[in-house]
Image 1 (cartoon, rainbow, N blue to C red):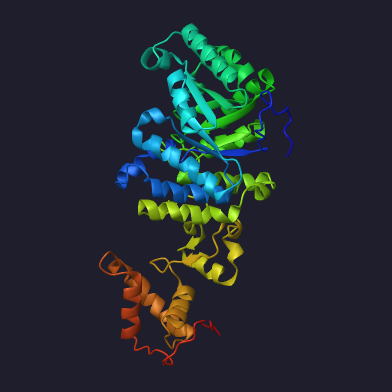
Image 2: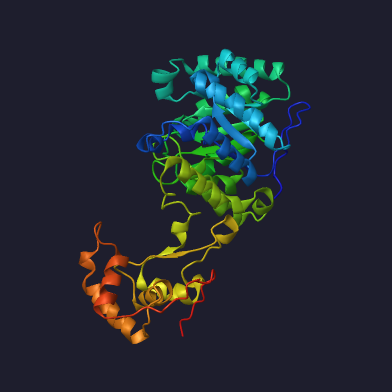
Length: 422
């Protein structure tokens, strides 16, 4: 996919972005997720960050957003270690983008730490002017111009992105006045939906406006999921011409989060086949599982790249999937690392799965007619299922009541089980 507009190169910068770049913000916005508090993790340790960083690099992510070092000593030390660690495991240039205020001291500290890019931001919405920056629009524009211009002059090849915080609640004329002031000096302009109010139609309009007014700059999107529209907004932004997408593992971020990294790649692969060449998609599911092991919880059931998305509980579905998976599995998740599916025994299971389970898993001698009778009894007693009695326990109890016997297995059971459903 070719960019319709020229990709800006600030002076002789070696930076050469791909057509679509994922900016992973797991180490910044992800650590602000309520889930880290729910799981009593609070922040990722350095070793956990190294594991996640290695997974991101293996996946093909080259843009990593991190906290500004001024947020705390621990984060400053971790970023320094992560930069060194990345250099030790890959020859590819990884951009560590410090999320910084328009504050020269913050910027200088991030660059001294080793960050080779800056994600600068400043809010000029009415709420930001009154309660956050406490600066007028004119003062904010003057500050942004002064800081961004000085940074570019001091660091001609540094990657710079600038965003108007809460862009979709900012008057467009105010946002454009701010962007006019920084446009000559930046690589990328952001359009963060900081509080998740945007709809796809809004996104299309804003992207079109920015592309027309700032043809040399690439555009970046950052959508929060307060309305459940973050991924839809990402797709709208990409169709309209955005090149950079902010995402995180599991979509971890403030409040309801942002788009899931692997969910974004899964959806982008549908429209942009070249994604499969840019990213090692088979690492998507292992990365999700890694996060689960760190947080001590399951991969969210809303995550597209998950075993949950290959789990079937309804009897009709289970019967069909036993014969042909494609009946209820329309998307190929094998390429994303999900190489199996699950049929869960439960109150909705039909005789096909119960026959399969008793015959193939529990080694019972059972006919299809017997399986139908056992299923009738099972369904009549599903009220017994709960924390104290699992579906498998009830089914085995019924099998014993019916006097079913098991096959006698040899002392050394073959390592590969043969499935015989004749």
